[in-house]
Amino acid sequence: MHEISFIAGIMDTILAEAEKKGLTNITGAKISVGAMTGALPEYLEMYFREASKGTILENTVLDINIVPVAAECSYCKNIYEPDRANGYLCPACKSGSGRIVRGRDIVVDSLLCD
Ligand SMILES: [Zn+2]
Image (tube, rainbow, N blue to C red; front, side):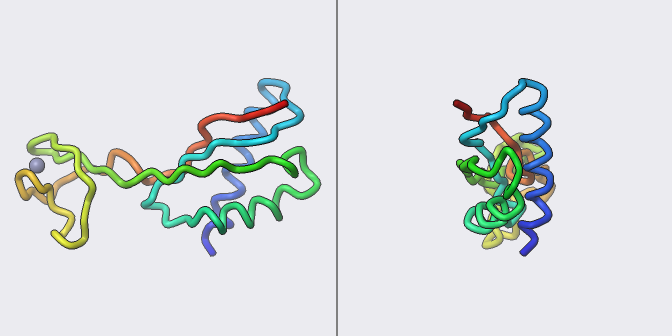
Protein backbone atom coordinates (compact mmCIF):
# COMPACT_ATOMS: atom_id res chain seq x y z
CA MET A 1 0.00 0.00 0.00
CA HIS A 2 3.01 2.33 0.20
CA GLU A 3 2.44 3.17 -3.46
CA ILE A 4 0.08 5.91 -2.20
CA SER A 5 3.05 7.82 -0.81
CA PHE A 6 4.75 7.86 -4.22
CA ILE A 7 1.70 9.19 -6.04
CA ALA A 8 1.81 12.64 -4.44
CA GLY A 9 5.43 13.05 -5.54
CA ILE A 10 4.72 11.84 -9.07
CA MET A 11 1.73 14.18 -9.40
CA ASP A 12 3.68 17.15 -8.03
CA THR A 13 6.47 16.53 -10.54
CA ILE A 14 4.09 16.23 -13.50
CA LEU A 15 2.06 19.28 -12.48
CA ALA A 16 5.18 21.41 -11.96
CA GLU A 17 6.49 20.36 -15.38
CA ALA A 18 3.10 21.05 -16.98
CA GLU A 19 2.97 24.51 -15.44
CA LYS A 20 6.52 25.33 -16.52
CA LYS A 21 5.77 24.35 -20.12
CA GLY A 22 2.19 25.62 -20.18
CA LEU A 23 0.74 22.17 -20.88
CA THR A 24 -2.93 21.64 -20.15
CA ASN A 25 -3.82 18.40 -21.89
CA ILE A 26 -1.36 15.75 -20.79
CA THR A 27 -2.34 12.41 -22.28
CA GLY A 28 0.52 10.34 -20.94
CA ALA A 29 3.50 10.31 -18.63
CA LYS A 30 6.52 8.03 -18.84
CA ILE A 31 7.67 7.00 -15.39
CA SER A 32 10.76 5.01 -14.40
CA VAL A 33 10.15 3.07 -11.20
CA GLY A 34 13.19 1.63 -9.44
CA ALA A 35 12.72 -1.99 -8.41
CA MET A 36 14.13 -1.13 -4.98
CA THR A 37 11.12 1.06 -4.20
CA GLY A 38 8.97 -2.07 -4.18
CA ALA A 39 6.19 -0.07 -5.87
CA LEU A 40 3.93 -2.18 -8.07
CA PRO A 41 2.77 -0.65 -11.38
CA GLU A 42 -0.83 -1.81 -11.00
CA TYR A 43 -1.12 -0.09 -7.62
CA LEU A 44 0.59 3.06 -8.86
CA GLU A 45 -1.92 3.21 -11.71
CA MET A 46 -4.86 2.57 -9.43
CA TYR A 47 -3.90 5.24 -6.89
CA PHE A 48 -2.96 7.68 -9.63
CA ARG A 49 -6.45 7.26 -11.14
CA GLU A 50 -8.03 8.12 -7.81
CA ALA A 51 -5.69 10.96 -6.88
CA SER A 52 -5.92 12.61 -10.30
CA LYS A 53 -9.72 12.80 -10.38
CA GLY A 54 -10.83 16.39 -10.89
CA THR A 55 -7.32 17.56 -11.85
CA ILE A 56 -5.80 18.18 -15.30
CA LEU A 57 -4.21 14.73 -14.97
CA GLU A 58 -7.56 12.93 -14.89
CA ASN A 59 -7.04 11.47 -18.38
CA THR A 60 -3.30 11.02 -18.18
CA VAL A 61 -2.11 7.45 -18.79
CA LEU A 62 0.99 6.32 -16.94
CA ASP A 63 3.59 4.42 -18.96
CA ILE A 64 5.55 2.65 -16.23
CA ASN A 65 8.99 1.22 -16.81
CA ILE A 66 10.56 -0.87 -14.04
CA VAL A 67 14.27 -0.15 -13.59
CA PRO A 68 16.25 -3.08 -12.13
CA VAL A 69 18.51 -2.35 -9.18
CA ALA A 70 22.18 -1.95 -10.11
CA ALA A 71 25.16 -1.57 -7.81
CA GLU A 72 28.72 -0.49 -8.51
CA CYS A 73 31.45 -2.37 -6.68
CA SER A 74 33.72 0.08 -4.85
CA TYR A 75 36.73 -2.18 -5.37
CA CYS A 76 36.60 -3.37 -8.97
CA LYS A 77 33.98 -0.90 -10.31
CA ASN A 78 31.94 -3.78 -11.70
CA ILE A 79 28.27 -2.90 -12.23
CA TYR A 80 26.02 -5.73 -11.11
CA GLU A 81 22.52 -6.59 -10.07
CA PRO A 82 22.60 -7.28 -6.32
CA ASP A 83 21.26 -10.75 -5.63
CA ARG A 84 20.08 -12.01 -2.27
CA ALA A 85 21.19 -15.56 -3.23
CA ASN A 86 24.87 -14.57 -3.03
CA GLY A 87 24.48 -12.15 -0.12
CA TYR A 88 24.41 -9.08 -2.44
CA LEU A 89 28.16 -9.48 -3.06
CA CYS A 90 29.96 -8.33 -6.19
CA PRO A 91 29.99 -11.38 -8.50
CA ALA A 92 33.42 -10.42 -9.87
CA CYS A 93 35.49 -9.90 -6.70
CA LYS A 94 33.07 -11.00 -3.93
CA SER A 95 33.35 -7.65 -2.20
CA GLY A 96 30.34 -6.60 -0.13
CA SER A 97 30.81 -2.87 -0.50
CA GLY A 98 28.70 -2.09 -3.52
CA ARG A 99 27.00 1.25 -3.92
CA ILE A 100 23.48 1.38 -5.37
CA VAL A 101 23.65 3.39 -8.60
CA ARG A 102 20.25 2.67 -10.12
CA GLY A 103 16.79 1.45 -9.25
CA ARG A 104 16.03 3.11 -5.95
CA ASP A 105 13.77 5.97 -6.94
CA ILE A 106 10.87 7.03 -9.12
CA VAL A 107 11.52 9.45 -11.96
CA VAL A 108 9.14 11.15 -14.37
CA ASP A 109 10.93 10.80 -17.72
CA SER A 110 8.68 12.61 -20.15
CA LEU A 111 5.16 13.85 -20.77
CA LEU A 112 2.92 13.30 -23.76
CA CYS A 113 0.36 15.87 -24.69
CA ASP A 114 -2.03 16.76 -27.46
ZN1 LIG B 1 33.89 -6.15 -7.36
